[in-house]
Image (tube, rainbow, N blue to C red; front, side, top):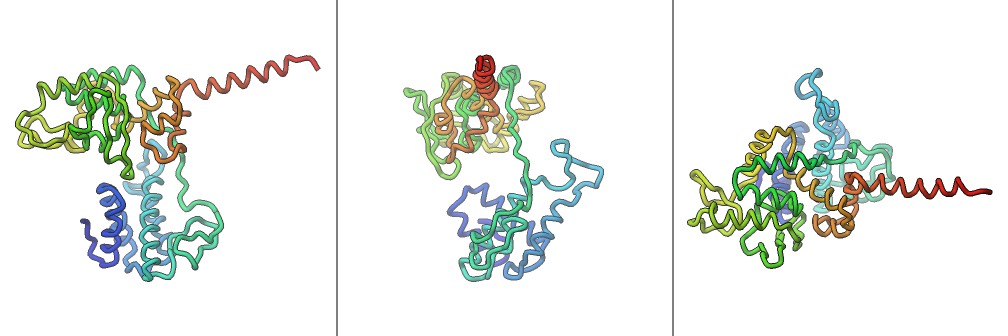
Length: 330
């Protein structure tokens, strides 16, 4: 359990630990540590002015004014990072308000909106401009050639099975690493995801390429002396037979990317590639939502725009109708 040395902050972390995944808890603890390192006040004394000053500090240049990110041209922290830290702060002060330690939440919901004093959640405020505007960008996906190069650069059947789960099943990195032997339903060609994002479970089909690689891995590569029931374990070194870690999987992909000559191919990009190709093949959006484990179909709609043929197809169908109308005689 993370501890920040402040009784109220540690109480909040203990409360939220039962509601989020371990990695989320660590991220929230770090966000709070960063905020209170900049705003050197106890939580009860934090004001709206302090929050706005914190946003300005986060936007300040990190490596000098001449160094910018190629992705967005910014010199400070990414807008998405600042927005996440503000969400962490807002959740903290909502909790402190409900506990009676604060008379309001000092994190404004927006600019140009009156901040509600009567509610810790700010539901009485009028909608205004967001504090931090984050552009919505389409995630990157791999082309068929890049997929071929990446899979060809993998060295073990274990690695091929893990990549197949993400590339053909759409599993997240944590879901791949958390897979147990009992979760693999070979007869049904499906895997059971017991601890997905938000604690949701789902049973999803996976292509035969995964089960072929898995069978070869279990028959030859997986250490026989391993007593752990995680499917994917370390093959060599002092940790042989122990569950593979996120850092280990990232290292495997980094090596494969280098051998394949690729500049990108993260675990999440493999997942995005899976759903984009499924949508291009005509899979219904509701089915993709179930496969992905999305709580809201609004999250799944992004694959409509990633799909190469959906928007163009819909546009050309509409234009054909308009052309027919224009060609009719009055």
